[in-house]
Length: 120
Length: 107
Image (cartoon, rainbow over all chains, first blue to last red; front, side):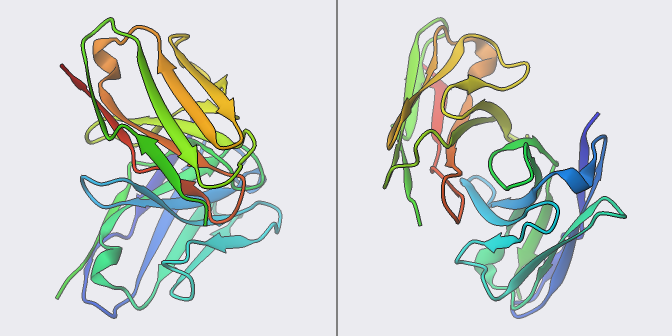
């Protein structure tokens, strides 16, 4: 059974940093692209960042480019999102999502999300 | 960035009715489109990929169509468990983008 378990969400002040983690199980993690998608509670979905498998590269939404860094450790079946220079509009539930292929495309499995709140 | 526009924002429907949701892309995305269903307090669930292919375990009452820039999701006979928010997502170009969602509510 595929499982994605996010952690690391917290209350942080504007300008602060946070690192999210997503531990995957039930599939060969290294073979699939992974991504982060966020959602302000009660609002729509926003694709944040993706990491293709086998050295395929990373991509970011314009809203986070230069502030967020996605990474993965295939030996630990873990996806990360390092978030720096956080702003109040980064407040959202952050979902980890698995893509069906090695390139970030659509998402067949999602985690339950972790809440990031940016506020003073 | 490709902008995905869904319509309507809200749809009030009675159980058993046929429902059609629309999704328009700001440029051609070929058939690189997925649909998701999200219920309150839950993560999104993949329904359709490649514009018209049903994901594993998705009932046949859900169907997708379209190509280029115009797409539709059809629910042939709405069941009580189908009341939810539906999102389209393009994966033709970076960054990947979602539509703003269509809420299907009980009439």
